[in-house]
Image (cartoon, rainbow, N blue to C red; front, side, top):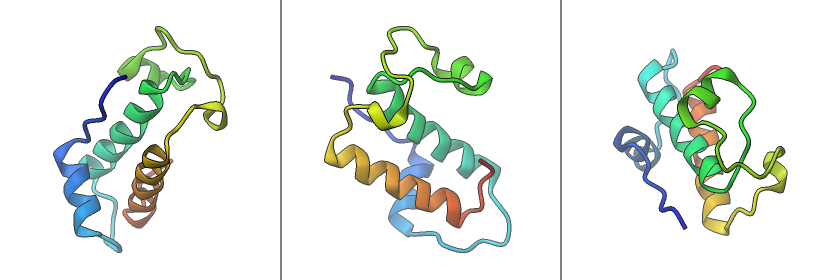
Length: 93
């Protein structure tokens, strides 16, 4: 089982609870995107976007739908926290 390592800036954002900046911080958004997709990759997600495939590849992927991933309760919490931060930062989707 692969351990999850969130980028430091993502951890700091989650810990600080940043909630309402005027504009998205591109670096913070990129770090959150990476952290979220690292969880998906570790659980066997088959990425569809060019950016995600370039960053993570699809070697060994098993699941075409995020809903089918075998996520733990901790995974669900981490993803929910990351998505909340992405929304609060108004990160592009």
